[in-house]
Image 1 (cartoon, rainbow, N blue to C red):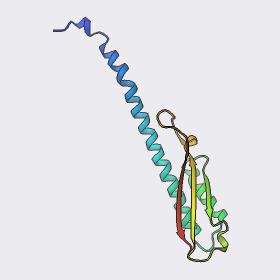
Image 2 (tube, one colour; image 1 turned 30 degrees about the vertical axis):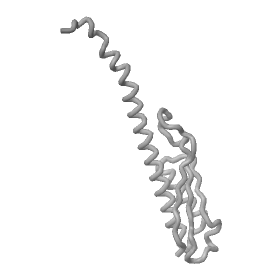
Image 3 (cartoon, rainbow, N blue to C red; image 1 turned 90 degrees about the vertical axis):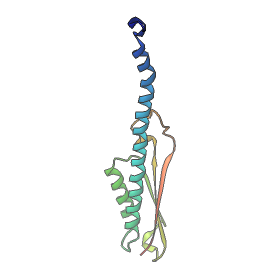
Image 4 (tube, rainbow, N blue to C red; image 1 turned 180 degrees about the horizontal axis):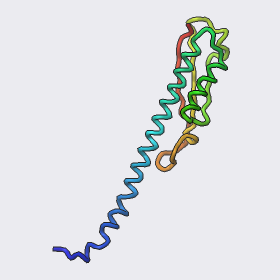
Length: 130
């Protein structure tokens, strides 16, 4: 039977070993969930922008404003919205219209503990003009 005096401090050592692993796991989970939210938000904004862009009465300014409003509602920073073709008013029916949204990871990460913040998330939504 071990002496109680020999066990003093074992719990502290175990905590010192396990706590960094648990914190890394928890913070990594938070970062991954934030990136999933960020991607879904960008996909939603691109899709809604494409839905607006395929209408005959839409122009580029309205589409970009709608996408930016959706991104702003979800507190996404530094996003850029591009509409192709450049002038929606001259596009005939049946033409593909693409909305591209790019979001920098660095400005939209709650923590920078586990995952690197380099790079840009880019999503596209393409629909045919009505």
